[in-house]
Length: 297
Length: 297
Image 1: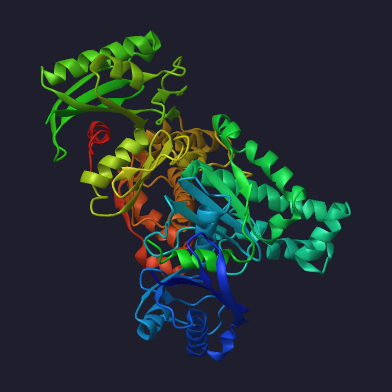
Image 2: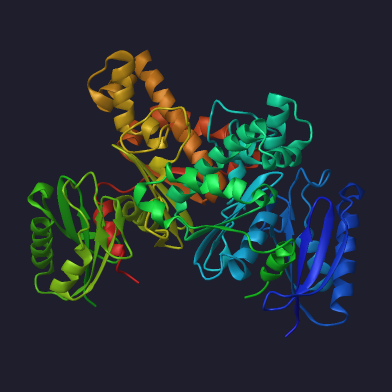
């Protein structure tokens, strides 16, 4: 029995770890991604990190979580905004060519979803919808312990869900999309547009804690749309549990209490008592832990 | 090897059939549902139909498709608008008590989804999202040949998907829901409100065929929202194929051509060439055929 390695490739840092079967991180390395040096550079860095972690032990598999869009079936990173300059990078083939072991790729939200489903607050449920409300809004569906990627790997791209065709426009997403209302970036943008608040979502949440009414209005609006998005997902998929993480959710009761309250008015009444929303349980290690699961049978 | 029977319980008619393994209907009976006589009355009617169909042969299983809301896990019909007066009807237990065979229940859209996935235009795909645009808008997700019901059986209730929080309100659904824009009922209502057209969606589609501009505007709006709904489902689930049926889709190219065109602007550009929408292939028999599959292993 060899080791399983999880790689969490982000726009800023790349982390790789040996993760044990019980979900414990045995050993972790972190380096700067430096995506501007090109994909080849970063991939060589990942190869060195994996060799270093293995210390001569047999590697059973290497799982990689990376920013989308990507194609999990072909193992190719397409052209993610968070890895500027990368275009059609066949990362799986390249790493496989070096190690000759099973290598799998999926997007970062799916990897976190998998970690939460196996070791976090989605544990014990057969259908888990994970949502991250952070810089962007992403999601991942885990059914019976497996990530559901969809035909081209776009399952879980809930940030692009249209909730208001006359609503805000934001980056390359649909007008009035969930991400254009509920993401940290959207909250920061809205606060600036409406009230000249310049410190982004961080300042908004600082003000919110101090009872600032402008911050309250901006966050209220974000929560309202997040509630609609979760109600839509409930009527589409009715998962056993939603696990919700990301920076925005760290505001705790200030976000969670109104969120749970507002979802109710959008659900079929019979579903209201069944509503099952949980915060994410895993720390920043969810990325490497989830990635390591991609190659476990 | 005994026979498999599918029951398609609707608000007006109840149909039951012996369906062969290749999807052929061997023998079919149809009677009036008469839901106002009470659930007991209709269930006795179903029992007689099944006995009549079996003609003494061994019954392997009985699958039932019925209007939602219902609980497929408990086998209970809750309180469907289309079966007025029915409330918490344990139809599975009652039919099982009589025949002592496997009896399964799921909602009518899921049953049609299953039939399309197995014998219709979803054949050969591992993830099929079926949509019916008819009096209402319903859906069903079939993964690897099995209906995905969700935790409480509400998966596929896409008619309640919010697409415009400031939009039309319609029956007990969410304001601005997909059904409130794209259903036949909504089309008929809108045509009456805006232009005094009294003949419902049927008149609207008749007028559309004759190039009537008012009808065109009403249908355009419905198609626009249907396109948004399908784009949302694509970004949430990215199924291999959508199979779309129901009365509204029978308008043919008048609906299909603009629908396919408009979805494009709401999708991630990479997904546009991958778009896979097909009309439903099965006639009115999809209900009994799909229901019969519920008890096939």
